[in-house]
Length: 376
Image 1 (cartoon, rainbow, N blue to C red):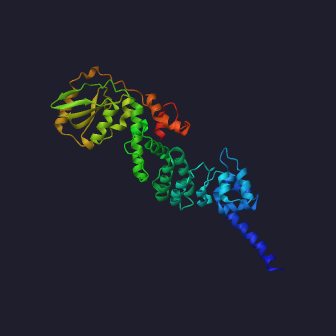
Image 2: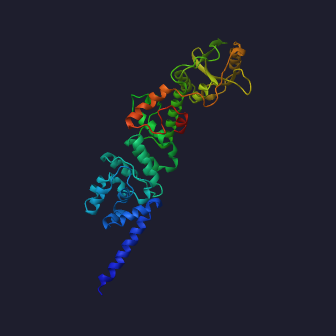
């Protein structure tokens, strides 16, 4: 018996063991399907080592993708680039391990600039790879390619700081950041840029969502019933914050959280006032009911940055409050969650996104939805 005849079975067994180890690295839910395809032909099996993503895409094609043309190219021994193109699988996925594929591979960007950039941010950990790939796919679909490269970098750099539950918000904010002719862009104080780190980006996106919520709650018309009347007392001017513009200007100037009061205001639970002296903003005042008292009370009176204000200002505010016949004021509180969002503002805000993406996702419906807004 020749040495070659002895080695051949051993080599074949070794290749079989190696293939099995590679196949076991795929997600358990899809291992059987991937293994069944690999067993159909040696060249298909070779993809487990040369192009794990392509083997997975052919075994678990996304809806609407016919793997037959790509399989034929693989079996015929054509270049991997040709087979990948037939399967609509980007070549840059070739560097990802089998562990990266936990669901059918979505359509992904594959232009030359994107390939060059994404190559620098591939995940080093197989455990991180599926999360990384899904985030890149989601951001590419909902935002744009530049944001997809950015999230790839941030996930590879600081995976623990990336809150995947906020990806839709991040995508909307990043998309509107690049759409200057839209209502959504007008509401952005700090737009997305590719040099941002994930922490400041989340903070900027959350601020944008807060302003969005203010607009959705109050709409474009000012609050007509401010409960009290504007007046000057002891040299202080008490001026109503009855519109979105007035509220956002006050919040920015006084460095406070007035922008978060949209939900409260639309349910008639508070009224906001600016206190000024000689035109200068001195304090922000909030009226509301206190405990079981049905009459308006001064529940907050704060200076810039929520600083305490002097005793004399509190006395002036009390005098202003009691200039009114409080017994005639009907605060008319609404049950929480019963005030509708402003439909015109909702449609104006999201329509450009729906049109650009050619769909209305269930998580961002055409009918104004508090649940959808809160889940962002």
